[in-house]
Image (cartoon, rainbow, N blue to C red; front, top):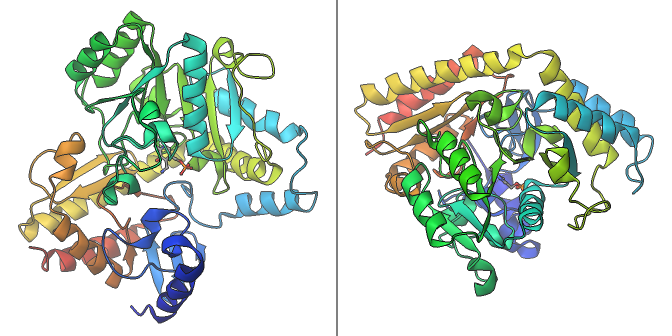
Length: 429
Ligand code: PMP
């Protein structure tokens, strides 16, 4: 693979954009080397500016569940764009996508659209605080909920890759209202609650964590959180920005049959355009302005192009539920192949998978929380990442991320990936 043009574009970008990127993980800082500049993408493939073709396992960090430039989505956007790109006035399509989302996801009656996962989580927490009249929140070490101040306390994803889990710029006052707990550790959550009796508005979590690699909840964890919330009048917020409309049509609530009080969405719900959303029962959502006291707004929220892309995507997932089985089966096949490839070369690794989310940690020990994820061998991850890239396989440039499988991947692509893994496994330490 050659990256000459990417290198020169990166040099130009660094002159006018901090670090040359508009979101930190794109910069390859965790793995070294030059980030790849994309020319175009179609289906399961990225075509870069140097003419390389890559099998894509990031899929824009989740949204492209049906592959890149998926025709119904692209056509919906083109059609809408011709009628105007933003009005700041209500449009019918907002109600259409809201009704569909509410029908697909259990336990929600109303949904509000925003422009990113960050906004969705930030607004959900404000709503929880307004609704309960309490200030503190519990979040889990290694969970990422976007870059809003309250969440940059031991966050996963780029915030941990770059070694600044407590970012400068987050005030002490804000940080003191974010209480930390360990993922998959109910006892620890119980301790935090009893040390802050009647002060906690909500517990927010990725019910399947995807920002410290993929870490599913251990048995009883979600149910235990539900009970703790009920017993202590705390709202349970599921951040389903990654998992929503991916692990099942109704997300983790459906998959694990556990009710959340507020759910946040992003990624798939926007079909690749900037969309986030948060949803709950009507009684909770009606706390929002203009009918309720909790303020939340957005000039471009419910943008027609974004809604058209999201609606086209959700419609397809709703009408063809077989897609979820299909991507799950592909991921299972990949899992098995990667297992064989890594085992045959005696590599120490742990693969976590649930549905179409999968990740490799180079650690022999089970990976079930932030500490066990951080204990993995990052040197091996770097070698693995670059080795796979040289073979034409693009995985996330950090071990604290998840691979997202899209339905455009063929079994041939999966076999190519497994063969690449077998080759690269020989170079690992
Ligand atoms: N929550 C989760 C679980 C996420 O994975 C992300 C982004 N990766 C966010 C929130 C923030 O979303 P956005 O980047 O769209 O602001």
